[in-house]
Length: 175
Image (spheres, rainbow, N blue to C red):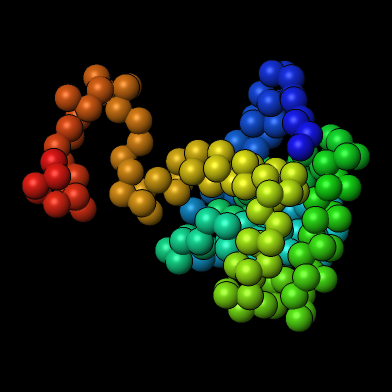
C-alpha cells in the first residue's frame, strides 16, 4: 500500500477551489429551475458526466439536484487543471468505470453502478473522488437546508442559545 502525502498548502488551495466552485454552482442552483451547465476545462465532457454519475451514486440523496453534484465535479476539474497527475487519475478512473459495466457508467442502473463502485472502493481514484465529495457537497451551505441543518451556531452564541433541543426529526426519548 502506498500512501500519498500532500502539503498543507496544496490541501488549502484545493479546498478553496472546491468551495469556490460549490458556492458558484449553488448560486446558479438558487435561480429556481433555470438551466445550468456544468463547466469543466481540464477534463472532457464524457469524464465529467461519468464523475457526476459516480458522485451521485457515492453519496446518493434524492432530494438534491444535479447542480450540487456538478459543483463537486467542477472541484475535481479544478484539481485536474492544476495537476497533470490528477487529470490522468480522473480521466483513467472514469474510463475504467465506463469499461467495467455492460455500458457507460452513467447509463447503468443503480445496482450495477454500486457493484462497479464496490469493486474499486480501495483505489486512489475512488478515494480522491470520495474525499472531494465530503467537502464539496456537505460543506456547501446551500445544501444544508435540504437536510434540515440550520448551519453553524457559533456566530449566534452556540447551541445552548440557539435551538439546543429543537430538532423535530429525532424521537423525543433520544433528546
